[in-house]
Image 1 (cartoon, rainbow, N blue to C red):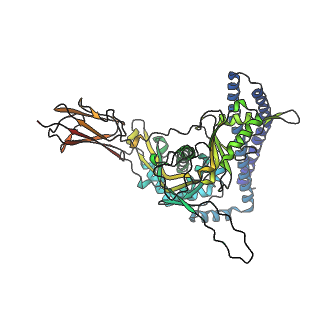
Image 2: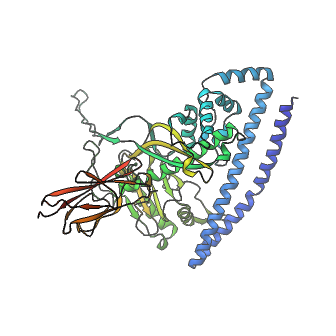
Amino acid sequence: MALRQIMLSRQIEQKKKELEALRDLDASFETREADITKAIEEAQTEEEQKAVEEEVEKFDTEKTEHDTKKNDLEREIGELETELEAFEADPPAERHENKVKKVRTNEMRADINIRSLPMSKRAFDALPMETRAAWMEREDVKAFLSNLRSMKGNTRAVQGGELEIPVVFLDLIAENMYRYSKLLNRVRVRTLTGEARQTIAGTVPEAVWTEMCGAINELTFVFNQITLDGYKVAGFIPVCNSLLEDTVSNLDLASWIIEMISEAIGLAEDKAILYGKGASAHMPLGIVTRLAQESKPSDYPANAPAWQNLSTTNIKKINSTSLTGAEFWAQLMLATGNTFTKYNRGEMFWAMNSKTYAQLRSKLITFTATGDIVANLYGSLPIISGDVDVLEFIPDGDIIGGYGDLYLWVDRASMQIESDRSVQFIQDNTVFRGKARADGAPVIPGAFVAININNTDVTTAMDFAADTANDADLSALAVGTESMTPGTFNPDTVSYAITATGESGKVEATTAQPGATVAITYDGKNVRNGGNITFVADGTPHPLTVSVKNGNAVKVYTVNITKAGA
């Protein structure tokens, strides 16, 4: 027997022992679940209920980790057994020849399901060894990793063209994001360039019965379109320079980059699908944001489906504390039934945080025929149907969901990595940023609902990370002691007027962000911020212009100053 066969057999044997030990713990988890279920039933005071909720969260976390370890071991055993079978069926000499052929081909496809990998397993590491080796031999991959390493200690400004991610990495990142973004698995995803228009059929007319030989009636179909633009989701991450040293292999570096970008962008996209503020905030339109609209937006496209006010029909609240289990689920079923439209297709999903998920489980506590207590809620809603996605940024008690296929997500443009050493020089970090462009919106918003089960209003507005890198607002603007109209400065108001009473005044413009720059002009001359100007006294308005620049954003404030003539 070849040494490789002996090693594989030994690894399989060892992992099977580990798996058996984990399976022995299943009974203890079942006992704990029964004890917690009993505690939920007996909890009376708020303090006791809080303690039980904490215990439920702890149990769910430990049970998930336990199940993940078992699944991971089962998968690893399967992979090792497959490799052993292949080794026994394929002599070493033939295997070497096949490997050489695989390295030379440009078709680097991995026959694994990236989306089903446990979070403890990096996507790149899960690829077959031959595939990873082949990727590392590609010229575009070698050039990318070489350029990436060369950024260590680089003091030049951020640049991105030379660090465009190789196509094989992009494909892997696109798949890997489905592990980090739970909702991309639920919605309809299209990859497009340019402006995207999704055609939607209107109300389907009823066909007409007639005589067998009679003339056929014409059916009139109405088609609408929804238009999607492209917005950028991006951010930077500081990388300790030691990770870029030669002691770190290219395989490790590639794995690390793929995981970090997948996680950062995937989580941001989940939040946008539910709470995105739309075009005015340069991001996708979220499901809850659309449901909360009480009037048609001024920029609503003329050729889009007829706008509907869904703020009362599709946003609901239920008082779970005053309802028994059966009563509660009956109310929840009625509320989720508001997802009905003529376009419903595919599967439903329901997003909530882990605390809300625990509340739902507590409403399903029952006794089995043998007297055991169970709460039969394992990843999907009973009766109502639809998988549950736990997202911790969703407020307590809120449940958001519906027919995910009726939310359209559009991916655009290739992803890039850019770097800069100077930003965090003192921390010995090189900063890398990843960016991608996408947009999204509910195609049929009536197919979704937002429900609060604590009898409080659904949270319809969510804070996103502030775009400080492109914030060109002023926080204050003053010209001496002169009074401006409007009287109170507002960063969103860019036009003001002054009827000057003095002869001159000091111009003071305070930027909202410390990195922003200010350029001021008056009477055809540049003015230093904090400098004095002498008012033109001819009885006509003369503009004082304050131009603010931050990143790629520019904002101009104008103050028309009128000073009476002598």
